[in-house]
Structure formats: structure tokens, C-alpha cells
Amino acid sequence: MSKYFWVGWMLGILSILPSSVAAEGRSVRTSYDLGVFAFAEGDYATALDYFQQAVAGDGKNPDTLHFVGKTLLALERPRESLGFLQRATAISSQVDGLQYDLATAHFRLGNYDQAALLFVRLADQEPQNALARYYAGMSSFKQQDYGAAVENLDRAALANASLRDNASYHAGIALYRLGQDTEAVARLQDVQAQGRDAALRDMAAHWLAVIRDGAAEPAAYAILVKLGLEYDDNVRLEPLDDDLFADEGDLAAIAYLAGRYNLLDRHSLRLGVGYSHYQTLHDDLGQFDLTGSLLSFYLHKNMGPFTGILTCMPAYYWLDSESYLRRWQLQPELLWRVGRAEVMRLAYSYADDDYFQNPDREGSRHEFALDVYSDPGAGKMKIDGGLGYERKSAAHADQSYGGVKARLGLTRSLAWAVDLGLSASYYGKQYDDSDSVYGGQRHDDRYSVALTLTRPLGYDWLRCEFGFRFVRNDSNLAVYAYDKKVTTLAIVTKY
Image 1 (cartoon, rainbow, N blue to C red):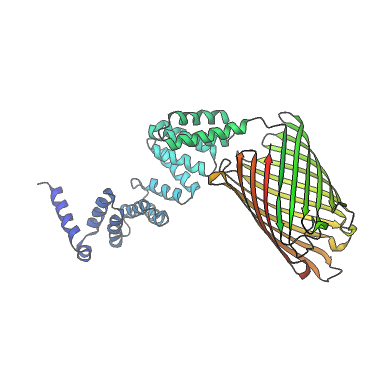
Image 2: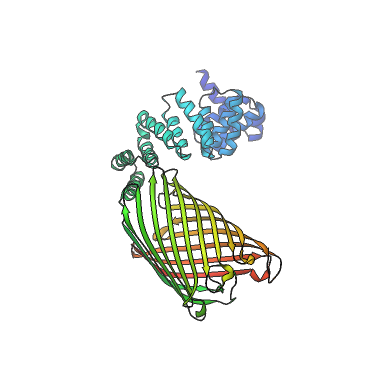
């Protein structure tokens, strides 16, 4: 009989002994070998027990430490795995498979920068290791380093045919993010036509539709109409300013109409005009019915990844059919398309307000804003957020203040064609002087959260919308503190 038979026989005897007896009589090498056999059989829990016994006997063996980390990875415990893999690497980085497992642990933990570094180094050292090259590409993809992602994914697809579909799919998305639509379409069409996995073919078709829709020529005009009912449990006494409230709720019909038309639309230049109209009709508190009309003239200039926008907006508001406010507003903006799905916006706005019923409020506003928009879900999920600062100088010192703003929003497509919108905002105002009526220098903190649910009503251009908004204003002057809840149900049509 060969010596391997006797080794196997001895290991078998040890494996059937009671665990406490076996552990006492078992050598470090035996525990390691039993762990290797259990790992090969897919019994990872047993393998981990054996490897941990081996580590307890010799905590400086890089092979044993590597196998503990490898087994923890197989058990979906990457955070625990990372520590053992790093200990093994510190002793010897030459253990076969150790660098791949270390990179994998970083990848599963979301440490994509470190994972990319390790996978690229390993793929360069072992050109035949297509899986390392693939995960080097995926690590770059996760970091939105799309150029490096395409390079590594293409090399992985060439090196191993079994990786070609997934590599081409993600390379197609990366090329789309880089603005290289023609090449992106070629990769995704290849996956859609020849991919072996039905789910992957469907996802490739989805991205092809996204690219096709994005390449469509924008319409010269747009129209939006919104009609609905709104219940406000604390109607404003001073519309547009959120200062004084009735402490009384009321139901109101709401109507909103908006439209725009491009008078000139060339490749890099767009000039147009827009108009919007807003109307509320309260059931009981008719004296607070608000009507607003806003005209806009806009100029867009495209400059590569940047777009400059200049908008002039004269507006007029009526309260209970009497003139309330005339406003002139000028707003320059700069948009920067950082990637295919990310846009940053820097804006300044100047407004001159002329109040007919309350001249103390007359004055000017200066506002600065920095906003970020992201579409990581290719239309199925969008995220936006922003910070701003506002400065108002009014005719009366009571109405002059500086304010900071912050907001965060999320929209997500759900089942049954329902779109969910969530948003939260903060607005803090610090007034310049002591209040002449109530005394003390006023400071307000206003918090707002909102939820919207929308769904098509048989046609894409016709939707039903439900909205709920809660507002809380904390003020050091109690008269200005309030809570407010608004519920809206509306029909929206958009062309």
C-alpha cells in the first residue's frame, strides 16, 4: 500500500474521534489537512473550525492564515476575512492565490480603489488570469473610472470567452457614460444578440433603449398642466413668505399651467420663451386665493461639458384678485456634466420685489446655489441635492435677513409603474435687527419633508399624483413658529 493510504487512514480515524479528544491529539498539520479536505468538499463551516485549530497552534503560518481568510470569504464574511488575509500577506505575499483573495475581500467590502490596485497588479503579473483582469475592470467601473474599466474589461473578454458577455455588457455601459454612444451600442447589441443569459440580454436591451431615448431630438415645445385638490391644515396669511399663518385648515382647488417654446435651437445655442400660471381657489378662506403669472426668456449656450444659461423672469402675483407682488428676476447658471449621469449646477439669482400691500417687504434678493444631480439608475433612480445662501435687503429692517438652504431628493421607479419621490430640506434664516413688534433678534429654522407617488393613467402623458408635505418652523419668537401639513391629489398631463 502507498503511503497516501496510511495518511488518509490516520486522518479518517482522527476525524471520527470525539471533537475534544481529536483536537487534543491532532497536530497543526493534521488540522490544516483536514481543513483543506473539508474546503474541497464545500463544507466551509467544518473547514473553518479545522483551520482555526491550526492557527491556534501556529499563528504565523501564511498558508493557514490564507485558508482561514479564504474560507471566511466563502462563508460571505469578507470583513473578518480581510484581517487574516492581511496577516498572511504581511508574512509572505507569495502564497498562491493570496493576492486574488485579498483583492476579492476589498471588492466585496466596497474598497474599490484598493481592489483595483491589487487586481491590476495581479493581472499584470499573471496575464493568463482573466478573472483578475475582469475584476480590475469592475473595480474601476464601481469607482466610475470608466476609461480604465473599458480597457480591463475588453482584455478580460479577449482572454476568456466565458467572461465575454458580462465584460461586454459593463464595457458598453462604461462607454455610454463616457459619451461614446456608437461604441456602447455595438457592445450592447452584441450582448443582446448573442448573450447566453436571458436576464443579461434583457438588461442590454434596456440600456440600448436608454441610449436611443437620450439621442432623440428634443421637442421644440413642452406643455405641462396640473389640476387637483389640496388640503392645507394651516393656510398662510402671507403667501410666498411663510411668515404668518391662520392656524386653520382649508381645502383648495389648484391649477398649474406651464409651457415653453424654443425660438432658436441650434447645436450649441438655444433661445426660447416660457410662461407659467398658478391658481388656488379655497373653499372657505377665499381671501387667500393666490394667482401667479410668470414669463421667462432663456438663453442656453453649450460649451462641451459645460452649459451656460441666462434666464430673465418677470412675474406678477394677485391675492384675492388684488395686486400683491411684482417681481423681476435675473438668473445666470453654469451646468457641468461631470459624467453621463452626473451634473453639477452653480447658479446666482437676483430678484427685485415690489409689494403692493406691504411696502415694508420691498427690496432685493441675492441667492447663490450649488446643486448636484445624479442618475445612477439610468432613469429608474435619480438623486439630487444642493446648498444655497440667500440675502434679502428690505425696506424695513424687520424684513432683512440672511439664510442658508440645504436639500436632498430621491426619485425611484417602483412596481406597477409607480414613481416614488422623497425629499427633505432645511432653511435657516437669521434676521439683521431686533423685531420692532415682538422684540429680540429673530432666528428661524425650517424643516420640510415631502413624499410624492405618481402613476400613468393609461397613457405616458397622463398621470395621477399624490403628494404629502410636512413643514415645521422653529423660531425664537413664538409667534413665527408653526407646523404645517399639506396633502395633494392631482391629475398631471405633459407633452
